[in-house]
Image (cartoon, rainbow, N blue to C red; front, side, top):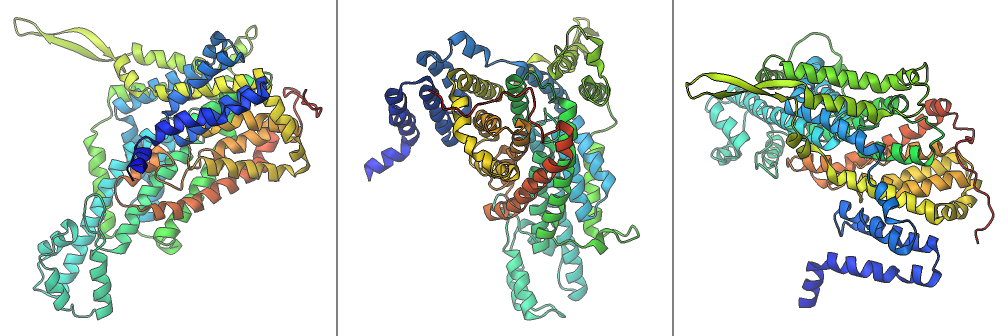
Length: 595
């Protein structure tokens, strides 16, 4: 028993030590560069999947093992850890830092919710739309963390309003009931009057209804302990929580900078296929935005039906009559918006820079017409999306935000300097250095697979899959990444699979984008578990949800997501990149066996 407790305590250490030792026969017996690279790949993959070491620490292993195996020199490996992707990430984080510092994100979210109204169905759609929009430019995690306090305030108001309505109804039915006492009982969980209600039936209500009501009072938030007055209130809280985490993920699909998986794919693809130059901010937005809109709307319908039912008559009925609960929702959101005050100079400048950055990204090389990069014909391909991000990012450190003042010995207040929109210290607190190192490790791993010949070997071994229909190959790869990303981080999943899927496409002579685009999009579909991604964990921590709720809802959203991605791949994405033709920029892999 004592031995077992030691194994449990030091299980990560045992895994770290045993994994390299158990896999050691692979490079020792075969003693080829492919086997040595495969050994490194397996060790890194196991550590990423189990998180025996922090993900970013595991990402440093190629920098250690490739030089020792003679696959790549240390200087070459080190150069893979900082690429164009990292400059793009730095510029985007500058924007995100300013947006969050000056509360522009909160203003945008609340304004969008106010625009759609307070009907429960439209309210959830408003939250989903605003969250998805913010997630296009901010990280999924920070978006969910920002919107959830607003949602929680609305949820608490729902409970309070419902308790108030119930107290009023009880007063009409039985004048001896104190509305204040009833409200306190429903909201704060005090049971002062509970025994009285159990023994004294309410006129007009059956015993069965009374029993159901008493059972509903036992429903509590697992974190706050607050009771939900009715099952509908509990379902509404669950619905809004899931809407936030799912829409933050869906919104991140639409832009290259929206989530780390998109950035990793773009850098991997552009490095492996430099002759293509077809994946940029504009092209990615055009291919992913329709899919994201469809997934968002279908997910909204699915979640609404699952938790509250979907009443079209109620949604589209005429008139502006609002229930007490709807008035309560509106009041909370209005009060939150009023707290922000009038829009400030810093918010206006941040919004302007945000718009300029987006316009420059879209217009750099739109494809439909010559972009501003055509102004530099002698340097084709030199300016990338990271060039735009750095230009705008630097402006955040230059443009004044406010004056810095000090008090002189005479008591006079004088300005002595100015503070920019963001400072370096604030930028550092937002910069995800762990993601930067993780992505760099993925690039190093991909470079090692190329240099050792492992990618070509994998491609040749997978070439028999060419006999399968293309749609089936795409479906299998999409389901594979969707399943794997539920138990591993999204970034680790895409980093691990890109060096495998690319040679697969080359081996079966299919346009690599045919397989890589659906797989990249599906890597973000981590909807099933609280631990699948940080935004899921954030909403789960509020106590309204159970794991079974997330599994049940997430399974439907996963199915919707994969189905829409498959539909999009074979409709609007095919003509965008001429996917039915094997491109000249992709290498041809012969079917001859490697020596």
